[in-house]
Amino acid sequence: MRTPLLFALAVVVAAPLGAEIPEAVDKAAIPNYRVIRPGLAAAGQPSPAALGRLKEMGFKTVINLRTEKEGTRAEEQAVAAAGLRYVWVPVSAESLSAADVDAVAKVLDDPAAGPVLLHCGSANRVGAVWTILQVRKGKALAEAEAEGRAIGLASPAMEEAVRRVLGR
Image (cartoon, rainbow, N blue to C red; front, side):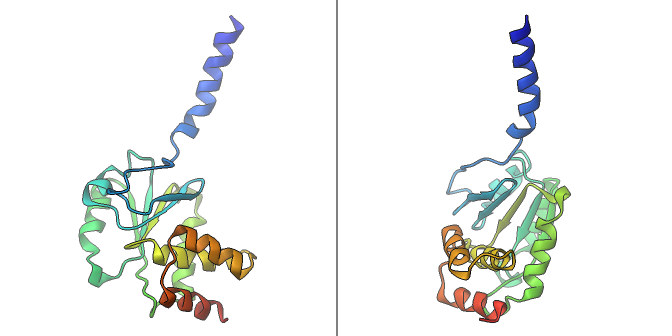
């Protein structure tokens, strides 16, 4: 009698863990997707169909780093229609600033915001922002850049932007 009760208790306790975001997704729907910490995933541009499924995947907030000329209005509408919070922080290699990183950090530090999908076109800008956040938390630049590259930081222009924002 005790074993079924313990099993039922384990299922109830583990249920919230099952509500976490998936470790892997269809790469065609959400390119360069990767969970970078519990409750936070990085990615390239999700497909329109994937945007509509983010809530059922467990996400509450979408942070989009793409610029207006990349076409963000349709995404904002799709995310809102799916019942998710949409945060737009337009970033380019030329425009990346400490204020942009602060805006992302504010959302990531808000427990009510998570789980969060942080994305741009390819995950290059996501990797840049992540690198800066990690250096701010005390990681060595080389270690933070390695994490950023694993996420998607790939262009020399974004690497230069990271160093500019960090004052290095």
